[in-house]
Length: 71
Image (cartoon, rainbow, N blue to C red; front, side):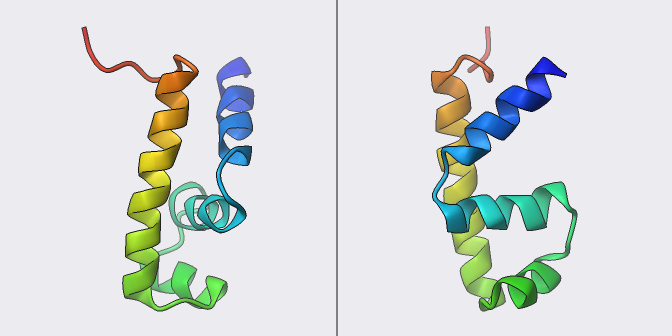
């Protein structure tokens, strides 16, 4: 339960658009096409924003020591 709270807190640190993309595409498991329609974006743009959002989220998780870089 604590880990879920930590992830939610990290998601809140993303810009609003990035947070919405991650929520729709990754957490709510919409297809890329469905998420693009829901967010009013082109599918290609969603893919680029999603990659950037995951990079940002990964950096936050590493900074907070919730994601390791390996042994």
